[in-house]
Length: 346
Image (cartoon, rainbow, N blue to C red; front, top):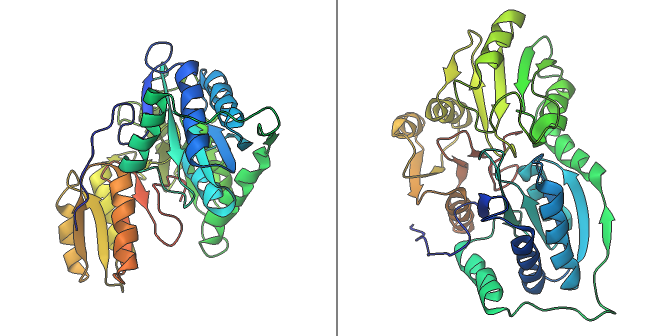
């Protein structure tokens, strides 16, 4: 099965991103909101990460949605996968203001479809067409949307992740969490705590200047995490990128676990006693092939980009093919029993 990439002008593999004030502006966010509201009328959830430009861009995005006649539910600061989970459960579409792992001067918009997946190529091109050809719908004064805040909805996501595991599975386990001052600051330590873990944290304040480290969880940036793991005798440390759709780890000795090795370790656990397919881009290490074959599973490859992984997983499942795991060799894994998007918290 092959999914081909289609050329887009604004959207990349993970939404629109750029340097704030030049490539990514409130004007562009407004146009994206108008276009999305035109294509997905109804109630749209909006969230953001901790970047300093987030309030301005989210306000512009919401203004566009409201002007197009959509009702907007502002979910506040939360991980991208949390918003995706909520969209699938409650809303007609969603959008997250985030630049994920990029440096603080960047921001962007990621559009979420009703099933919780990222908007695909063809639909993204249709959205771009509305922007470039100025064909977005502007509602009359009597049909403009309404906005409400629902910042407590993220609790549903935290509960869903926690309930996926046996109660108190982390009892007597010490773990160190490093959300990197990003969106997972209010979720990952809470998830680990509810699972019974003793949790130490660093970079757990929400701060869009990212004073502790850059949003990309690199081995160099995670040196303080490694030190805290060894100092506390923790079983492992976990870190996220800015919007927490990825998770990376250091082991009990403070060693960084390369993301392809991480994928292999988790696949080794997930595939035991199961037969089916692992879906991943061609950029992933062939180590995954070795792990899959060990348990009678096979690997299906896609173009680079999590949306192609998710779409392929959906298509295979619709054909009756059991899909046990998906993801990329960058710490962004997809657990089909939970939801069909990368989820660092899970």
